[in-house]
Image (cartoon, rainbow, N blue to C red; front, side):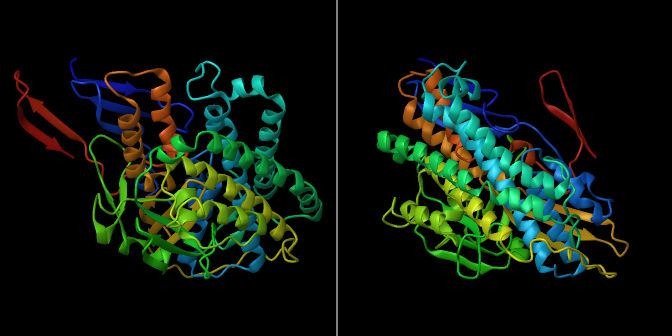
Length: 475
């Protein structure tokens, strides 16, 4: 049998465009696999020259799935440029907005993108292995899934005017207050939303119980983990410090100020993907790759501040003797624990006495030359870093987008699954779906994640008839 390359193009049930290439040896076994992000956005460059106060609404356009995360990270960077401390009501509403983002995004991913594999089967007919197939198989479940996502989106709309690309967070605060009528309407929905999130957890855990050996071996490998925590090392998604542990659970960075992220994180570039490869600088590349997002956050935190989610966290930690859960399939469990937390925390904020306050903005007439804003987006830690001149004009932008943090890990995952399932030249559609499922564990948003650092050159090469380069022009 001759060696060959398998291409999966496009990857399905993810946000954005990408492909996978798998190399087989002469015996038909996988020898390598790569996950390619095939689209380029470039926000880092074309934001230069804009005034910084436009950045929250401009960078929200990076993504139609998680615009809230980008707007909040951007607004936090702008707060730092202004050198202001937000009012407590503004912080509450920003976190409420972010919780709405987590609810809608996590519900979307599990029910619409991931669950067809769990509920219909990895080897089921691809024509119905999708949300349409779910509606046919269980209309009531599909309805509840849409309803839960709508709950999160409605929170976003009420605070920002629209469900997508809202106008909510601004430099120094929030644009809109929450009224009592909307607060009460949200509170009335908490009980069923919690019940729906627990239903999702039960669906996943039932699948895990029936397929424990597969789940435990699926794209399982040691790595470091990154996430944001509060002062007591509890899960934090809007505000906190960074925590990073290595593959053995040794804490490498504890309560690290995210504004100084460039001291510990760098980015590597491969010529076969538009997405960069972040890594932990002291360990170098590729030794310093880490995983972020739900699996990373639950592996680095020691607790969750809401009772139901904290109880699930204990179950999650008990999956491993070391306390570190390495299986990529457990991203889904971690994601649903975060969904439960987001709903519980939404109730906590809605019941806070300051949530209806209109004291939402602070101003400043001085500009710092740099501002860094960091939040936990649904898919991982999100960094917005801006440099400005004395007029407030942007002179430089660096973005490390949530999905980018997991780029190296996603590449490792597709290789591990391809190596496990492709044997002796046997390649089925169901096997290739498992390779795609390794990527879906991370819920990547590929369109979010490709932004150039520095100048992207135009290169013109002149070649002779034999293909040899005889002249190169670079601009």
